[in-house]
Image 1: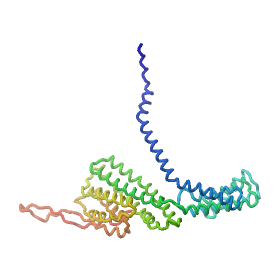
Image 2: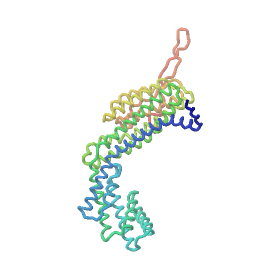
Image 3: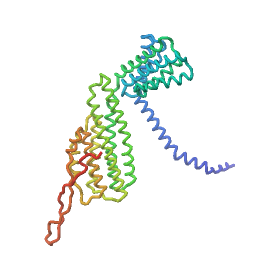
Image 4: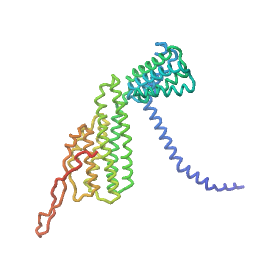
Length: 416
């Protein structure tokens, strides 16, 4: 006896199976990537987490066992808040925590002795404490701590002298955190340089993709390059934060002071890198326009973009090797010399592209360690190649020749 054939699947079942077959592998890859990102974030923050945990335990031990304060719960809180999840502004955070606690404890202790404690007292005392902190030009952290401490005092109704002990707990927690802050890993010193190298690599990739898109008249690739250029703004923000952390480490830790010149040199790259990204973004936008409008861009100009991309990649490699990309300066100088020649009857887009290449050259010269004035000195004025008919062939017809004409070059100053 043969098995009866299975009933045919409904359209909904077929659609669901098709959806699963198409999207399940993609979702699995995305899930794996997300898991890797989570582990990477944990690895990046592991030092902070362990440092906060150890500091919290030490703060409790010092305040409770050495000083003798009863239930010094705010000592570890102050230590963790002071350390935070970044190296920057730790001293400022410690001062704000201590002052905020002092304001909150003072207002709360005074208030409960007059009005007692309860739900309306909590609401009113938080408003008073935070308002007083604001009038003292407190920052967000100090104002928040004033409100938090007012709540603690109101709800816990401390015994005589407990208010002062809570303030000393805050001082102890802040001091323990500042002592712990002198112990730092080397990663905050390396990360700014590595991230700067990644930014320059992205600049090189965007330039290379843009030149290829313009040669092949591929609008889709040009759009992708423009999106990458626009997204690079976030990378600059990250570099700014990393540079701030690195500078905070070398200034606060006596064991890292010798790294200050190297970290400061990377921090100084923020301005020229920002200008370079802005100029390249304009360049890529004009590449899109040239493709859309069918404007011709001379091969010499495309070669300028390709060569600038190659030099930028070399600069990124130098940054990875822990020094400023001074070796690339000669290549940029040669490219600046070649960028001064204008082809016959150029289109608007082609001249905008050439101008942005020249501006980006100045920016990248500054990345090699030059000042703005020194970088501008490498950029010659522009010359046009205009045909003149002043020579004659043997048959009497005009023979066109080309001569150089100096042009008013508006891009010798950084447009940004």
